[in-house]
Image 1 (cartoon, rainbow, N blue to C red):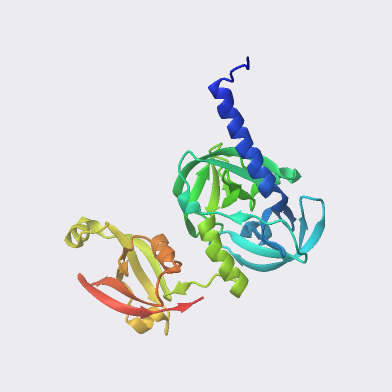
Image 2 (cartoon, rainbow, N blue to C red):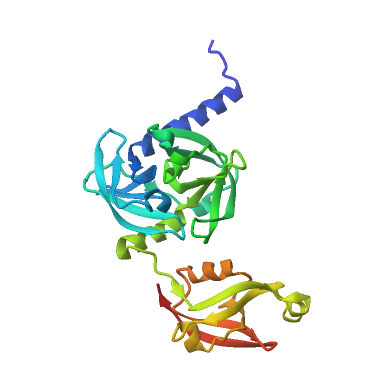
Length: 306
């Protein structure tokens, strides 16, 4: 008579098999990157294109890439985007192992995720955990706010930066980017849905093109009277100056105007303004609602990209 396996052992065995399967699928495409800094990366195309963090490659113009099979290559920079802390580099080789890019929008809190990287030089170190939260925000080194960050309790170390966060099917759902050392056990990853857009821009232009207004602004409290009068948040963006011949200048935006909305999105802070200008779905000509002398005005702005 066969011995009955307890349910908790079956669950643990299924968990282990899921992690092992994902690591075997993704591990061969995870690389170690060395320049002025060090970190990890992941091959997303068989002809040598590698996705990593901007801060891993930002301080150097020469990189050494070690593959999981021990081979070493020199890599060239294709493009980088400090605003999302992502970069693409390339090694001259083909028929390389590559990963499958999943969909971060389908992630759920509590879902199993696996982080793979090279912390402290240890090749293909694996840690598993769960999605602790989605939709987090965090600041990059240049002060920009990245939205929709994935928070996980999978153990991350500095060398994990640029490595993949994968689901149980072995699909990359995020790029590990930081760890909050003040709060042990908090790891963060840039969602792969964001990375897909950035990859396309970097490979085509070497940078991410973003719309700009040509203004300097600051987040200001508007007061309860204004908030109640216009039924909106009590904070907004006040224009400090307008660059001559910029899109905002041509549209008639003036210093001391308060930006209320871009299209139908309420603007409450400089961060929300930057986020909307970075949105690839924002048309090149869009409506800006401003408050001037307690009167709402709608201006049509035709933007350029930078």
